[in-house]
Image (cartoon, rainbow, N blue to C red; front, side):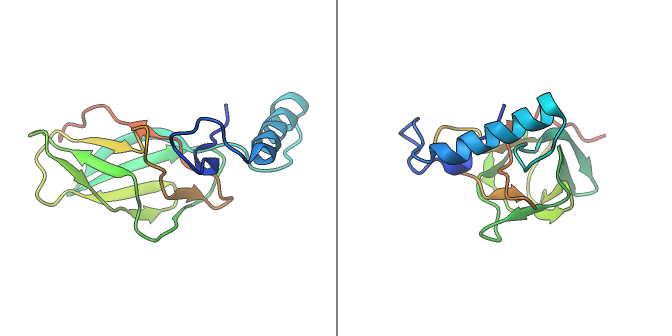
Length: 143
């Protein structure tokens, strides 16, 4: 599977115009998985785990990348839902493969959403420019 969310210009049109970029990602996937030759980035990071550390939610992603970036600097598409049902658009500090989200004013348990709707195009990318896959965590209890 490849992610093409960053190649969509209009979220109401399921047919991206940039077919070449889609083909290139699929070709890189085939070269790597079938022939064992890495020819370029094709894999998007996916959710690995989410946990509370002190007063932050730490969301760790996995995949073939080193660091996360956001353009613009403020992360778009990231939402925390707290135990009262309150939804808050949040920003995060990016640290390697981890998002650190402050929990000021939110009550446990927590749930994190990233671009988990039909209309949001997120800002998180890898160092190779690949977009992060949309995700939703399970409820995260504080221990």
